[in-house]
Image (tube, rainbow, N blue to C red; front, side, top):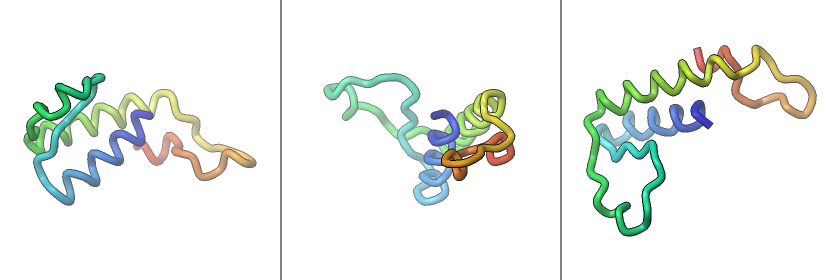
Length: 75
């Protein structure tokens, strides 16, 4: 999940720069109050998420699991 979040936020910041960074659950009423986060902070979270993902991802997948994120992709 952290790999996907990192990839998503990376793509968002490359397209739009500053974007809202949400790393915890936010209720519907509070979702409208989330402001934009500077691009540098979002990219710092991307790096943190990738380092966390790297620790738990396998080096490779086999069979039907092929195509999933691997340790190499997180690195």
